[in-house]
Amino acid sequence: MDHQELLSWVAKASYFLAAVLFILGIKRMSSPVTARKGIVQAGIGMVIATLATFAITGAHNLGLIVAAIAVGVVPTWLWGKKVAMTDMPQMVALFNGMGGGSAAAIGAGELLKFSAPGAAAVPLVTIGLAVLGALIGAVSMTGSVIAWAKLDGRMDKRFTFSGQQAVNFLVFAAAVAAGIALIAWRVEPWLVVTFFVLALLFGILMTLPIGGADMPVVISLYNAFTGLAVAFEGYVMQIEALIVAGMVVGAAGTFLTQLMAKAMNRPISGVLFSNFGGGGSGEAIAGSQKPIEAADAASLLYMAEKVIVVPGYGMAVAQAQHKIWELCQQLIKAGKEVQFAIHPVAGRMPGHMNVLLAEAGVPYDLIADMDDINPEFKTCDVAIVIGANDVVNPAAKTDKSSPIYGMPILDVVNSRQTIVIKRGKGTGFAGIENALFYADNTRMLYADGKEAANQLGAELKAIEGGGGH
Amino acid sequence: MTDGFLYLYIFLLAAFTGKEIIGRVPVILHTPLMSGSNFVHGIVLVGAMIALSHADSTLAKVIGFIGVALGAGNAAGGYVVTERMLEMFKSSKDSK
Image 1 (cartoon, each protein chain N blue to C red):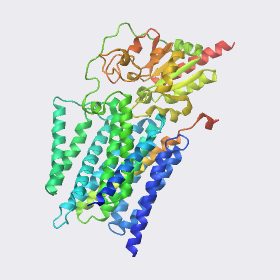
Image 2: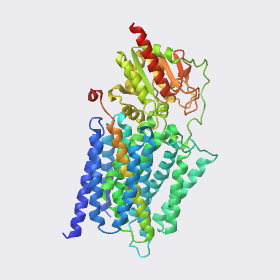
Image 3: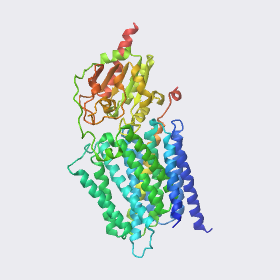
Image 4: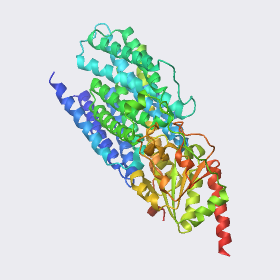
């Protein structure tokens, strides 16, 4: 074994170790107790693999490689450190888009290499996977960037025009045709460029009409896309660790995407190709919304024994999680049973609410999933809905003409009393009226989430103080 | 030509592994998990580094540079946000 061979062996062995650490790391993330160790373990794997790669690259373009790593690591590291917890979904989308772009760049580089005059013949499978990985990676990149812009409030929620689906389909078909030409005909530089322009364009077009409420599914899907793209380019580069890590993420992401789509009772194709709320508008609701003042709402809480808090995206927007938890701590101290009910797609990412509540310091054993908490609403004295709308709308169960009919919901309507904290009378993302808000035992507390939690806390203290004398 | 089948098996087994290890993850960890798996595909950095080391022409170097920078951003950013999220998960028993 000569020197170069030895170095390659060391690198390959390190990749194997990294792959093992990745799999064990993700496995450990399946429990809140070991999750932190899991990500650290995966991180160690990444550092080992990156350092070992220098054994293969040697001195070729070493300065460029180090500079590029610095350009990539420094800003994202600093940004990731200081970004607010509520902005996590768009950060995940952005970093995911970078991974897709990296895979697409590998594909572009390899395809251009194949097209160079005098290049050796390349097996069709290799060209095929290079093209496929590049297509998926490019779509994931621009799609994720659009998702980031939407979640970050930099872009209108939805962008639609007539004939949009036809245009999208044509662009997609053209990208696929260019890809097939690369595989079956020949790899020409102009064709490579055309192919990439079309693929990048399709990622943008595909994501533009999708609204904020569907973003959890979309980010998860693009995460799976990037995984697959990495795996395919891993085959092209003959690096097994990329294949294993990419494929594990691709499969896991696909599974997670299905899970979420199921939770919303919408097929993935429905998320991608139809606009939420574009269908029927549901039956009109009789009755009126009944407002309540913070003092009265506080006395309802004072008398309650069992309270369930139902947070939604509105809580994230209002940054109200800390104040809500303060209020809940007050209730717990007064001997009341408090739980948090989380709908699988509340917020903009699966588990988005859990992250925010964890940030505020809510212990995870007080947080319950939909299936566990739904039977509890029957014995609940007061349910507090803060910033959630469509996921608590009983029309999903009763009104067949409603666009959200069939979506599993939190059965807040079964609670004895419900207090809805909401800024105004507007409808939710889906643009549908919420029958819960018109129910006889529902009271609307019109206020900013943070402000409302503050007021409730103060009023509750006043009542407790008065009751003590 | 038959070597391809070995890779096919790798693809297959890795896919099953991915589905299996995630099947038992509780909903409360879905976001960190998505973020964590997002970090793991940052391994694309390794492929991009090797591709850049082979680059000769200016165009190839530019593409390679972009690939490495994006891959490194994916890995670094993905790690930081995931770690920050998981740091916050505490049981009520821990805090007492």
